[in-house]
Length: 59
View 1 (cartoon, rainbow, N blue to C red):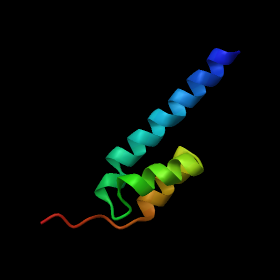
View 2 (view 1 turned 45 degrees about the horizontal axis):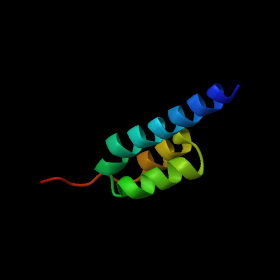
View 3 (view 1 turned 30 degrees about the horizontal axis):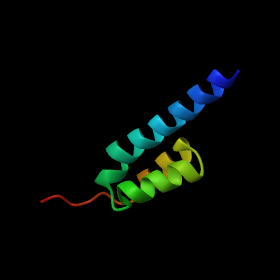
């Protein structure tokens, strides 16, 4: 039973990192805030918050 909780926590942290790295870093919210919101709520809520942020203009 303990292994299931460890697996859930690992998947949660990996999803949080992926959302922050690939979506949050390219937006005004940034990597750090994207990680914070994903950990504070859920990776899905973090994804929604990151997607709502404006994209960074790269010129």
